[in-house]
Image (cartoon, rainbow, N blue to C red; front, side, top):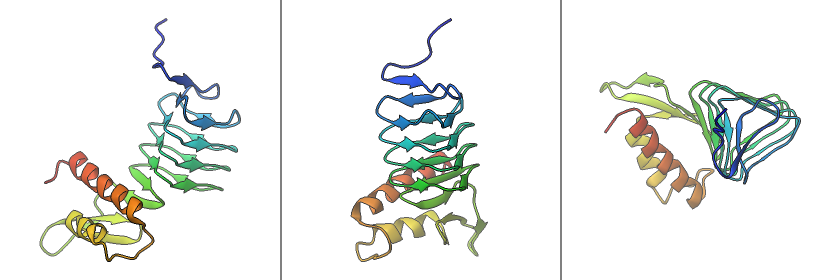
Length: 159
């Protein structure tokens, strides 16, 4: 049998999912075979990460939380208690990003939901590029959000 575990990674004993040696997953957690946990991420309590889900950066998943499907939890996001993050959702620094469009504006542009805000990519980019924006984001979080916007735009094949 060929070892498909990359150097610096290991398979979690409960679910056989990939865990980078820099990440922490407690023994009582489940990391499914197609899921992965990496970076400085921590999964603890009775949390489950499965499907094609990924937990990375400084993200935390704890309690009885479930992260599954194509979900991504990253940066400083926390998923805890009985929370469930699933489907094509990305959590970055506590903001929820929906990869699917949430509507179309009057000009025919696709609208995306980020947290509780809905708008086009250009709206979100302008908002988070504005140094005067005093929402719940510090400079580092804004830079992470802008990077995520560029990535999401590329993933969707949009200009």
